[in-house]
Image (cartoon, helix red, strand yellow):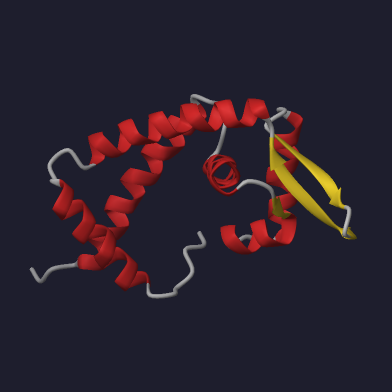
Length: 140
């Protein structure tokens, strides 16, 4: 049987996505919430428009994510004083704390998923995946 790389990639991605969902669920989050929180922890306050573009989600989807995160006290939105039409999204102290916990959990998951690969192989894998994606959207 010839290699079926797309199926292998899809299957491996499914396994990783399932593990990420399970890990984030321990913190009461879904992947979109977790990724948003980690992005804000890494980059600081961002406009809602920039955040939607970076996450590659429709603005209405982002509003739902932010409503959940804001309800849980992990983020907050404020009007941009320079342009009242824009919202600025910030991570709260509680959100920073949760993001730090998630970072540790995801690092543990990554170690388990890639236990059979050395650092160079992981770097090569990341480079190859970036080339395969080559500007393609990762939307589900």
